[in-house]
Image 1 (cartoon, rainbow, N blue to C red):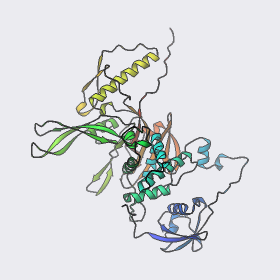
Image 2: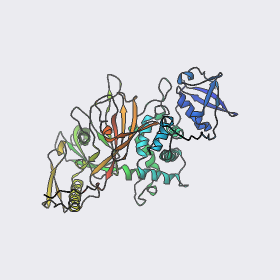
Image 3: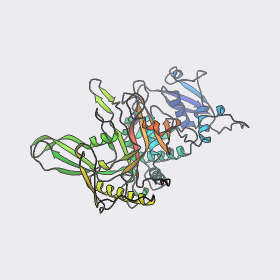
Image 4: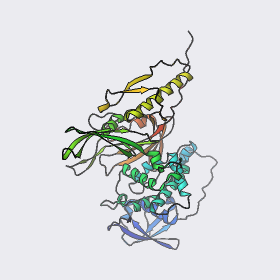
Length: 488
């Protein structure tokens, strides 16, 4: 059973408001304290006036003067206040949210509740996956659904998604964050100062997917006839692994695993995401050899047998530095594409089907554009890949049934990390809107940006560096515009 992690150094105070008294834990952030009061009283943060010994608390340093067991008074009303109407409104009089609303921009930021930027950036990427939102809404509306802690967390996640979609001001996810920290105490750890510690965005994502996968059975998904839960339908894929002993003659072993993400390994030779993923798919592992009677080194070659609707790629930037006794960050510049070609990651049968699909699509495009299709032999060859596949020719037979997808993925979300320490720094989410337009989600601050700014998040310095890339599968490629030529 999950238990709340309680800091023995945390101070508790009593707050009197409207004939009611609340026992509240006092941290070191005034914004966090006001957010707690909002969840208890529904008095908006901007209307709260906190008094201690007849003096108003205005900044974080004021909290340090409040003693444990102290008595505070809060003034503020929970009713909706009507603002005055103006005949003329000038730009300098508008809030950032009002400007964004007039310009039809997404202003749905999330307030930080104590180092929750890792969570906020992940949520902003996930809420742009429409099938996931629909499945969670179906679950929330089902009266027969379980009512345990994980189910409550999922329901609150759906409620948060819906409010963010309609919000004109930043949203404070107090209920969701409290439930998440209660269900998973590792995300409620506090530092020596009593503040919540920074956490890992990938661990946060995997926890979300674990909870959603355990509750979103096939009946809540877009394909109720499937035997797999919603998360497996959206993110899951199969990998075929081949193990070859490097220390003796031993028959190669094959096994099939399930996965929800790809890893991009980074070293001094990796410059591009595709190279890093291919490196992660071919590695040397140590296993017990029955034939040799001891541990031996095996070459493990992994290839994708299926392609998920949504692909998450994690840059493996953090590593344990023994001499410092902590996880450090690799800042090397690794470029990532807007359109990712995963064909070289696939096993031969799937690669042939993808090749057949691309030949079919090209013939159709040429016909639509009025171009003469290139005459091709029944079998065409191509060379792709790195590592053991470098220079390997894969034969594409146009007699092979085309794949139901193109083998390409479109980038729609990026989570970046700034800083050199895994347990510190700051996360930001970046989400595609349309064309070359993107949005930057820096907690409650939302601002527009361009595709060029996204591609610049590839690392090489202390600025924000891509840590997680979110891709959507392209089952159909965008139509190419018909080219016109002038008559001579």
